[in-house]
Length: 436
Image (cartoon, rainbow, N blue to C red; front, top):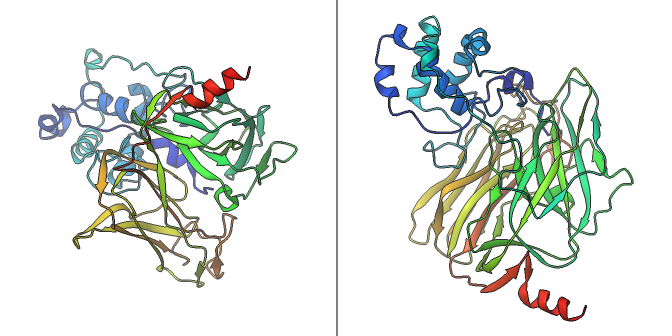
């Protein structure tokens, strides 16, 4: 799905949010007074170590001064231009969960430190080392699925995409509360999206499809996404996702370019719902298939419109385009005429597919209309464009295009009042036990 110089992009992935309370005074101090140990290490620890550590996905560690110092100028360049960290939704920092963007104060601190000669400082000022959880984020899942055998990723300078089909089929309607993804090889897995696979999609004998394959075009539904720094999806108490009987799980993995052969066997963990389920997550789709981008067109616009048929509580967003994708906008028009840009992705990047989960959900009244607006750049100015002379239409290949928008929400007034045990409705569990 993604074509980028990943060794450059991953080199400066910086994650988490927030700004140390003491940073303001330090930024205003003389540039030579900022040191790695006291001022910069805490920022890098909170922002970078998710990837830049031993065993992380980045090609180098930034944990120690000796690790980070050779990259000082490169780090500065990437953070000042906001190329890194890779997050493309606009709005207030902290609106989204796992919003990795640096604050202006943090960028100013890094700038002053680098321009001041990037001094080390007193090692006594270093923060305590951070201990990273390398296991499941929320404890052992109720169900773990993974490919039948490790997959061999050939050495290549190109991005590789593989969709794996899991053997497990849900025997009954099952309510789940969360999904976690555990990459088998952090050096290889750039990102991974878990899907629900309907019965009409047949599993190949080898258990996977490599290359250009868009699962949503075949009828799958994206369930969750993993990328470095992104937490697993755990729904609020009383909310669940019903997986219908007969569906399977699958995962599409983007493998980063590598000079060496690697293997991977990524696992997906499912947490079943227990207790009272009041609400089922719903999806509002903003898709178009009548894509036809003229050759050389730098600002092709495509829009779709939907209306909320219930008072809604919006939890998260997802958008999907291909290499010509330039920007994406979800605009809400409320019944009282008020207009709000609910999601803005001004610099869409096919190389970083994210789920934009709100820290505070949006409450949207019934009758609110949504404009899903995608803009595309099919000109030679688009560095990812494989052929500016080509008319581009909808298709599953990366070199084709798509227009997809997803809003995940709950109905404000819904109350299913359904008691479930280990993912299954209690009535169904009791009935099955009686037939034994």
